[in-house]
Image 1: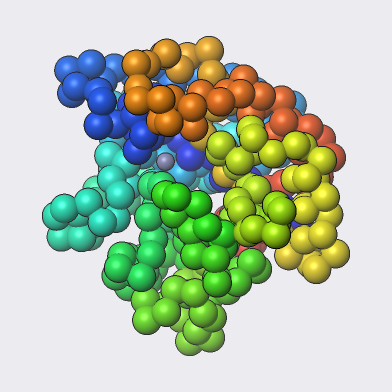
Image 2: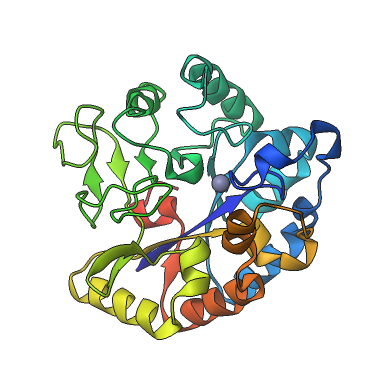
Length: 276
Ligand SMILES: [Zn+2]
């Protein structure tokens, strides 16, 4: 069994887009794609975890009901898609957890840091999650990219603690689900979603899922809401690298993920952990 997380966020949330958008331009577009996403999961008889940016439920409370009523899971992706190391965010985090809890009737048990910004400087987040009785986190990519990655971290789920995020701590109450990674020309690179799902040949990804299966490790995937409804993603004037990473083969993400759902079994984190 493998795990599917959908990072449910607006077109203006990604780190490569956010700094270029003025506040008064931030209207909701992607949220309107929720029915298409739910229909797709329904067709594939797959449950998923929606890591939702809290402000979207604040603006559109029906999102919560729609996701939950179809048996999917709601988890936390911060209130406004902040990096954990954004200035002043550490002081705000506890309050945000509280806020999200209220918005989601205490249903959230899992967390994903925007842009996988959990690293040794931001490991304080783990203690907050444990204090709030969160069960799991999925913010570690055991590979190296320009923006994130902890290449020395385990590839199978492990108990994570704030002292050393790359090492199992059997006494910790929080389970970490690292994202799928592969080796490409000898380098450890992400394979479980986002740009890498669009960039890598599908064969490379399916072979990696099979090799995880042989090791009895769940392949943990992520996909962005704006990759599932690319027709709602506006074409933005961004610096060239940002534009490339955001839009490269954007329309290929859904058909590729769809093939993976057809070939392998996926479920939400809570169902995988049997805590729903
Ligand atoms: Zn995100």
